[in-house]
Image: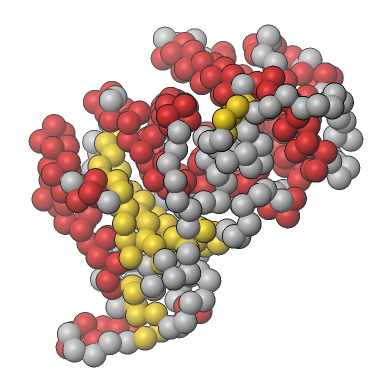
Length: 400
């Protein structure tokens, strides 16, 4: 069953090496934490959720709404996971452009290692691509196809198409666990910004057409099934309307207000600075949050900023400390010492609990300026270089 799709402004460019390496390290730690705590099926479910996937890209430091999130996140996860596939029981095949053409060969290699039915996996990979590229002709041509499969034989697909005329990309998500038919309404959602009539041969009403293999049926987007659609705006900057301020304010308060940091449940994270605690709280929610928590993925860009400087430069020192803390917590948990991992898990729980009584003042613009003016302190970087030291002295802010 296709779980959903995301419409994203089309962006060009590459991910700088300093960010790509960090994305792979933190992405791998997030995947490992999810598998360890909730199992491999839970990871596939998350990858098939367009809102969660977007939040993951944001917390890894990519531009919060661009089409490049798909390529960069899947590249980062493939590098991190495939090194430890035998241990994690997860394999990522395919990718962008020529890499997508290698998907069948890579799946056959996985099958040889795991005993899975390789021909069947290749068949599923090709059919999911055919449905989105041919059976549903919505103006987007696929250029990226990533197939994620577990040793249990379950799989998910993340693939993306391009519409250069509209300067938009559309990401499609599939999940195998509920799939009944590739050719008869396999989609839980094919709904996006209306670009006119589309051809949908997977609609149940197209059965006579498929039987005859002659006629075609046209259906408007508003007649298709709806479940999930993430349609992001064209503006590059992060704006207050893109974020649930109650959620963000609670997370920032947890990290920066002294009376909260002194709570007994956070003592195991003693010595972690407020700015790193802010990032840890948002990463914790990506790992442990429920699906309803990802309706505003831009909020997660407040963990590690974005490579183009929106909402602020990537704080590389904070990023590195976040990676180090999660790596150590996972390693200790594997040895049976789960205290630190539980403390990191509690960050998202405490932040959610704080939202109930949280009424922030209008602090969004001031907080952005606060982050940008302090960026140089945390090794802030963008694709243009290091964040400069501001000429004016920054002042501390209160969220209340």
